[in-house]
Length: 243
Ligand SMILES: NC(=O)c1ccc[n+]([C@@H]2O[C@H](COP(=O)([O-])OP(=O)(O)OC[C@H]3O[C@@H](n4cnc5c(N)ncnc54)[C@H](O)[C@@H]3O)[C@@H](O)[C@H]2O)c1
Image (cartoon, rainbow, N blue to C red):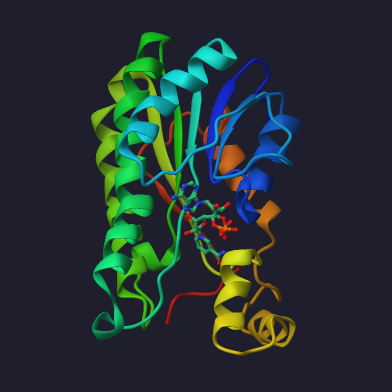
């Protein structure tokens, strides 16, 4: 798969999956505009730091990326947060932050990016949702509902903008070995290594995903190898269903 000459914006570029996406797209030949809170250690062509809960930052990102790279072909909405607990344990802030990062930011970025992609004949948007956005797991209603909204947005935009040559698809991972996953164990006082060993045994392929195993599917959806796919939600789960 080649992305030679392509220009890509990646959100959450400093995170576990985000760093792997930046590397996979860079190795395939793309130029990268990366965004996250801090980007000092992230190798990219343009660093655009900022907070995705700031509407003005999201609205401006695609144009800034296009300006910095000399065009824009690919947008990866990867950043996300997980707020844990049942609804009766969820605060207003949990709701506001979950919706701001997981739903409103991709909404604003897609809305601003589509005219830019369309003006150059099309492009690809890849959203990182979750298997819990397709089939909700227990005790995380805010995460599940926000990822379901992102999955639905993907399906809507996938058909609404195909006529402009813009393909919108989503990756829906199950557990991935990243800071997001490990922080949850730490918060519950569980040793992350032991927890991950146990989780590995629950996956038919024998291990939870490494970030690179998600990034390779993102690369596929960003590339012409997936040129007839629009609005797809690809579950990437090593054979482990949500129960
Ligand atoms: N790790 C998993 O098990 C798993 C499973 C399914 C889906 N996902 C999804 O994959 C994506 C990447 O997650 P990850 O596991 O790499 O998590 P991560 O926590 O390692 O990375 C997320 C990145 O998003 C950035 N971010 C969060 N809020 C932000 C904000 N307001 N402004 C700017 N940047 C912000 C963080 O700084 C971080 O670098 C997320 O959308 C997540 O929901 C992860």
